[in-house]
Image (cartoon, one colour):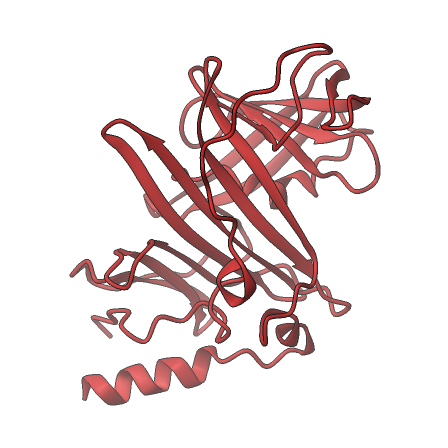
Length: 271
């Protein structure tokens, strides 16, 4: 019975849109961004995200979070798929490694079902979560998707979110701050728009987004940790931070599993 349930879930979640081909076969579609995570002047890790937007309007994002600081080590892999209408199709976050634990969320019967991956947690269904933004407090790279909504012509942007870890919903409020500048790897000053997260899950953050139409996530700053595009510096003339050893994701690994992030060992428990 369990085997049939898994087979049915895999069939249900199989990618059928034309945009899915961008994620298979070692393709390098979209744009891969790497950010350096720092605490003070010390680099403690990296985050990556490959973002693919199909002609149909579907969105695919996959990446990694790596922190190596004493006892606080973590290596997470994430995958997001949004349907052309903007609703959540799938979200998956697991600890790296074959036996990595985590969670898997997917659209089911007009709602969102969350199942544990090697955690023993029962499945839960949420009827009003599909149209919300998938927020994961364990990583910052997902804010590259939120950045696409941050129109610099607006002073305030509200984003209805669903916290996939806590299984709670709410409204994140981003308030635009004065334009500032950061320095690129080529020592060029560029303007970025800071957005203060004044309401939302977790601690307050400032999200830095490129001023151009791309609305690219440049960096994130919290109380004790920052993240900035690799090789860039926060101020003109600031010394470059020494990068920790890190292997950037390659091929299918960089974009999630070729089957759209479905883990055949994900536990589906309940109705």
